Amino acid sequence: MPSWTIHLKIGKELLKKTNYNKDRFLFGSLLPDTDYNWKIGRFAAHYYGNLKFPKCPSENMIDIEAFKRDYSNNLNDDLIKGYYVHLLTDNYYNEYIYYNKWVQKDGQVIGIKTNDGDIIEINNDLKLLGKYKHEDLELYGKRLYLQEDLLLPDDRDAIVSSIKLLKDNFIDEDNVKERITYLNKEYIDKFVDINIEEKDRDYIIFTEEELDELLNNCLKYLCDILKKDGLL
Image (cartoon, rainbow, N blue to C red; front, side, top):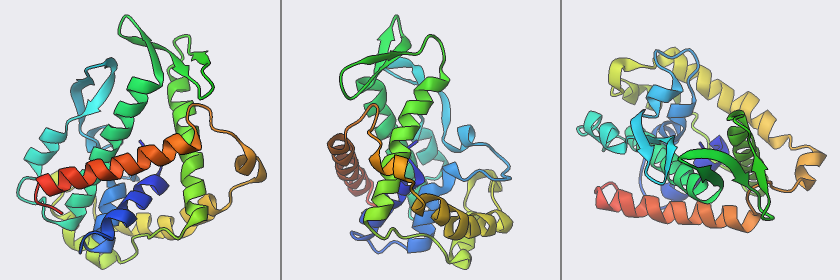
């Protein structure tokens, strides 16, 4: 749910604390979002099912326990660790946004809180929920990229050695090659090229300080979970 750049920033910070293989871990940390010509779609890759957020029952919650059951024998693989971190991160960001930014009535989302205290009424246009959320997170991700060098996965062979562990073999070597090529060419060009309007644009539902705090708190949360699971 956060932008790829946010996932990469989180991956970079976790790599500083571990001896994880850079390429397997970073590819895994993007894995559920890179569904180009896969055997399954993003919904299934994110382990969305019947779970809902308790305080926001209209929104899907990732089934972390189902993921852990499926990969109980392979959580020590660095690609699977990255996949796990991605799902934990998405759940963390989603919970924060749904509980703090969505305006609800009778269990349904009817509006969005802006960073200046206004409410944007969605009038049953559910696409607006994703629009404002993603615009802010993508902009923040671009600014992160401009502030520092983020690591990218680029060793295809290191990644391919782990994809056989994925449930139902939902990606193959060609999928890995396509994604690695995209990340290191088109993706870089797209995210480095932040235009003047974006440089000057304000966030809609967040503040810069809030997004910094959300990122830092998420990193602390991930470290706690990984330590608890014996993965850090």
